[in-house]
Length: 282
Image 1 (spheres, rainbow, N blue to C red):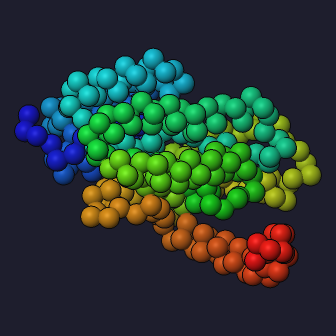
Image 2 (image 1 turned 45 degrees about the horizontal axis):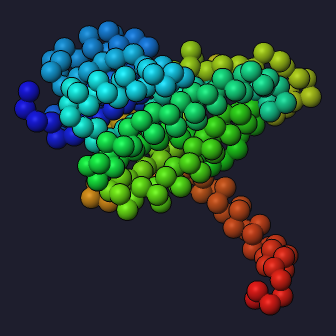
């Protein structure tokens, strides 16, 4: 095998963004460690690149599984240039409707699983003083959405974690990019989505209305996963990768609207805000 340009480690590659990222990376001559619940299917999809693809299973809840997979990646390719934390899922239901068990389960994968894998990969990146971490967030990591409060909470957590990590890791040669997609035509609203078991009638016009629209939205989203994968590769391989990459017009407009509202409110309450300091602090 000739030396690849980059070695990618991508989670959640059986479909959607993950699968298209594997395709995009392999198409440019890179090597990929692709983790999935169905690694044999991922490997079978790219027979022409078998020498540059390591398709493996990975349990983000199990530190031993994570350590073994990272070790196998380093033994096979010698390094990890780009870690893409893509694996995760959504949950729909009003904040009050989602049970402790349902909330803990989604946090376990979307936040703690990502954290475990990131910590396992970082030592090799620090040693080489090189690497890039891509965390798949959502426009819902910047804008709260009725019916998706717990999912948004996992992505808000990821936003803060990533900003802090970026500041800590930049002097060590490691970059961080948050990818914040809007609605894309993946299986996110299909098998990858959990619906809260409890339904409270009082939320019918907010979370309930959003939940009722899921079936009509699934398969009709404006976002193209193929173009999204190419955009992520473009961002990561740019001379100066962005800290945040919004994907899709919907995400761009919703986030701009949120920031405009925040700025308006901050300005309106400025005197109260700065008045909370000791007088001599001014």
